[in-house]
Amino acid sequence: MFEWSEEDLMIRDALRGFIDKEVRPHIDELESGKLPPYDIARKLYKTFGVDKMALEALEKELEAEAKGEKKPGGGGGNMADTTFLLLNTEIAGVSLGIIASMGVSSLTAGTIRSRGTLAQKKRWLPELVTMEKVGSWAITEPDSGSDAIGGMKSTVRRDGEDYILNGNKTFITNGPYADTIVVFAKLDEGNPDVDKRNRKVLTFVLDSGMEGLTQGKPFKKMGMMSSPTGELFFDNVRLTKDRLLGETEDTGADSRGSEGAKSGFTAERVGIAALSLGIINECLRLSVDYAKERTLWGKNIGQFQLIQLKLAEMEIARINVQNMVFSAVERAKAGKPLSLSEASAMKLYSSKAATDVAMEAVQLFGGNGYMAEYRVEQLARDAKSLMIYAGSNEVQVGHVAKGLLAK
Image (spheres, rainbow, N blue to C red):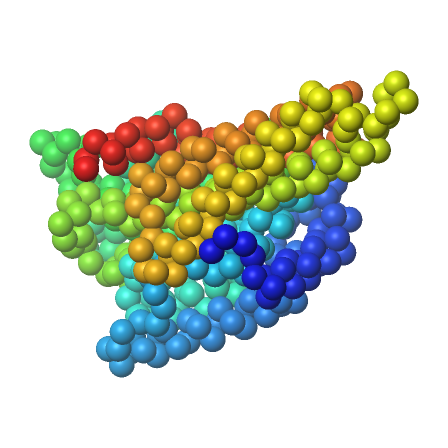
């Protein structure tokens, strides 16, 4: 794949029409936090039939699983779906937070889909895949952001047939409003000889309103403000075994039970490239238009070589990141999705490219670029979040290097 198909371009244009009508008029409300993004996301799903298609695909998958048949699909996940990618890139360039909230809700569903029992899938997935209910994926903690597994302090202990959950999570996308929450916690078996870093990680599904669960208010952030982010607190939350994903503590060869988290990281990091592409596209569009319209000394600034250099470098970044995304699509379609180290490389490069492009767009606009009215300042704030979101870029360096050294 080296370019969007004619069908893709038709979908892209329809998406742009929806964004112009349903998203751009509400940017100020979204950015202030007055308007949570979920109703807009649901309207998007309904407008393009995403909710019906997702539900139909889920029903076929569950029916096949009930019969013991092979699940449909090539194992590539959403990266094989160009409609999904276009949706990500187009909305990211206008309101990154909307797509972040949708993406994490999808990640929540994906974790249940890949690790849950048939009964668990039937219980939670229908409302999640249609966005009728909002999901959140809770792994990050105040003292264990980059060291998410080793430094995790949230614990569950057995209490008869049930489990008791204690601890807290932070920087949780959708946390303040989530209906369904996937939570990672370490099993405390009361053995002081077991290193806390090496305790087994179990994954549970919680519902809002459970006794002992508190969902904090949305944080005020530098960027991506249209995506509610907050804390979750667990005070002796009682969990029945049917909330343990897979309904078993047996994690097989994965002694700590962390592979599920790693697969989530891979999906998130590949997705960052699509979001980065959306920001780069919008910055380039706005910058080209401004370079044609803004005049100095009797000329439009697009005639000045330094402005041309900025535009050229933006275009190079766009080509590089788009090629990464297209490559990931082909890999997913072939049933050969990227490894964690490859996904980390994509995330590392694309997020930095998006941030560099957005900051250069602000510079190109001069004083106007610093004003909210011209929108590039919002894109710069949003882009910066991608260098931290889904694992800081400094952590990605380690993953990339480990992947190389393991060969």
